[in-house]
Image (cartoon, rainbow, N blue to C red; front, side, top):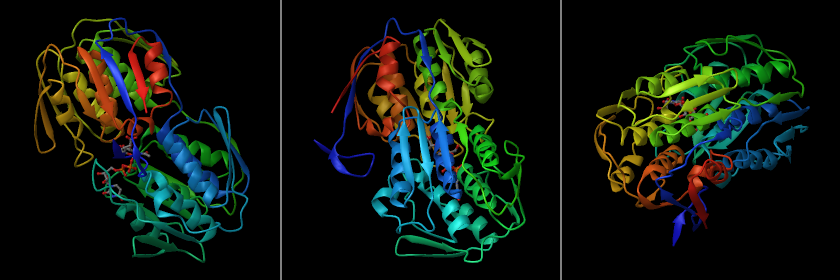
Length: 431
Ligand code: EPZ
């Protein structure tokens, strides 16, 4: 049956078949590099003509799409095992960016920074919204125009130009937008003078991007706080950088195990990046131990329910909201989830109801009456984290679940079925 694929191309979508509950789930799993750190860092590598070697860069459809965009612009992008080598030794981008390629991922908007800052012109298709919300880019464009860019919009394109370069300035973000902070911080590295971004996002991926930029010779300070200062420099060089572990992948595995009352050990994890989830899991009765680069969840009984409200970092991450909702669906008691970041991030809930979850929604709040058991069902992934929530539920549901449109999931989880199978899940992928 032909379905709209996650990459926008028509064609049959693949499915996962999961037989639950996964009785002997547990063991250890190595966390991959962070998708949401890799994407802005890949784009930022275009700020220089030098060779950038990005280690621990996950094999995902999103990083693949970003590599395709950069290749289409004339960069050399070479995958070498878990590293990616990028050389943007170009005098100007090869051609304008195609809609099909750009519409595959939201993070394509991050290409604006190097195009504008290094080449003086960024003409890209307007990034579309997606299931989780309108996802405008007004804060990005407001920041670029404050830095002196002329912005024109029309025919589905955004055309930003700064032929005489960008100038440093003070920028206040009306919302601590992750993407806007990344785009403006990256562009400011080559601006004349100093840029100060206040009310900046402080997610760990921003600090990782700043570390990469400084290795290129940039002068970024304050990343990881709500005020980032960037002193512009005239040129940047290539460098080597290891991408931080993916805190959302790590959180997803923790939630899968907690829902089964199983133990799990995450290797190459960064506990400080998951403080809010670890606190919530402990509140629910889980027994977690965190070391320098591992997190261990010990087997426990049925978790108690909790209330969760998503907030900008270091609050509870919106990217774990769907998975946590699937966890609460079988907890003891009634819980509530409030989604404050995106206006439409409950598309997993009707699918969880098909599996027997007792969830009602009212605006951006979901009220969850925990049930003892979910039952396997045929469901569809509508976006990346909604899909991860369905996997979380299917692992503990009784019987067979078929999850359609799993290309959404594979945008953000490297070797997902292999890792789950190694942990004891009965899962297979069918094309
Ligand atoms: C990043 O998206 C992540 N993506 C998202 O992860 C994550 O959910 C989000 O940050 C919030 O943490 C990547 O890093 C590639 P935002 P981004 O700009 O940058 C509004 C996943 O599952 N907004 O912080 O697009 C926006 O509509 C993905 O891995 C404006 O209004 O998020 C949203 O309501 C999903 N105007 C809120 O801010 C703007 O100009 C947060 O968006 C920009 C954003």
